[in-house]
Image (cartoon, rainbow, N blue to C red; front, side, top):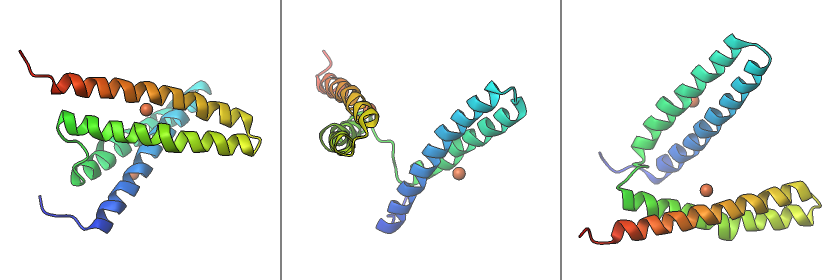
Length: 134
Ligand SMILES: [Fe+2]
Ligand SMILES: [Fe+2]
């Protein structure tokens, strides 16, 4: 596979964020429709969600080589979780608290604690991966 232009790569990543969000959103919409006994609407949301996830996202992911070897994937995951813990959720929690949005501030802080756990688990898994097999 040939080299991909930086802007195209950026657009693919932006499109993937949209597809991933649409997948989760439509699954939640399906849940809501099913609660109201609207089985056909729920099926429509789920069928559409599946295409966003298993076709659109997956095909775009392949073009940007999203998935690498296990150690590459762990490094990528650690970098994402570290950003969320050290920068994103820390700042979001502080800004929400300063704005008086205390529920959101609590939620950001609680999610941040979960991300710390994810980060530690991935770091351990990477260490384990790097140990020589005896
Ligand atoms: Fe799509
Ligand atoms: Fe996480």
